[in-house]
Image 1: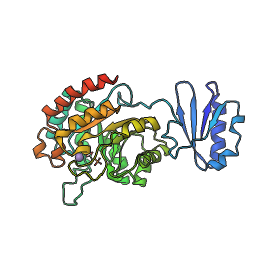
Image 2: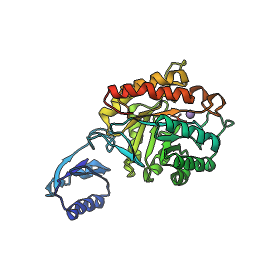
Image 3: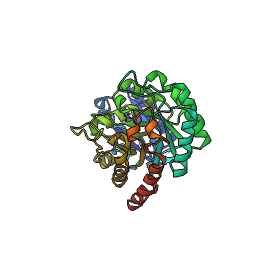
Length: 337
Ligand code: PEP
Ligand code: MN
């Protein structure tokens, strides 16, 4: 249920309503719009229905939210959310570009990659320090050492940073070093982890699970928002289908579908969606044409030597071409890149 407050409501009256709701044992999330604020109320709707909230003079309207995802839905918030991370907007007119290696391998290499992606126009540096590998014998990432490198290199090149957190116990640690917390596809329904990043004060990049429906994807985002963290960026990264030529199948439908259902920004990861570097540029073009708010691309100075995901990783020249070729597509749909 959402309670829309009148623009002129006093702070005291607003607090009275918040106190009343919490006395009923329900949780509130306040979203401050340009003109009016709205209170999202989470919990048993039956408890709420009997309360005449419309009787408060400062309340404009009480609206039940019918969709299963509440805070994520457009019923809760109509205008698209723009998440600004250290001055970089995600969800506005600009198409944000995140790029970097699958895994952070060493300081010099990360620095070389960061310098090049910055030159090509990316604003956000990606790189995994905790890697969710299919095999326990594969390289698992550099852990905290990798996080330190990411922070240092991000600062040097003035790039926002994004990196995966896999374990709820490491959320605090990753928050100390990175600007955006990534939840990987394999952890999309790790509800303890979602709750933990929901309590964090950093934006979250939530990747769609390998076989998650759009509804399940949005319900996972709801976990994060319900803990008070409204800064969630969704990421379509391909889903499992019967097709084996590509690593996953890019569900391009997810982009406009999410735009219709939610106010949250959605970015696309054509690297994991295709698994083949030669398909990344056309998939990125399709994603931008479909209206995504950003791209996350695996880039390496020497993909053939990368410790993970080399097959889907662009070298610098190809990433430069991606930027050159995707920009006119963005312009064609009224976006800037
Ligand atoms: C990644 O971004 O490197 C990654 C592991 O992605 P996903 O969780 O989408 O597989
Ligand atoms: Mn990867």
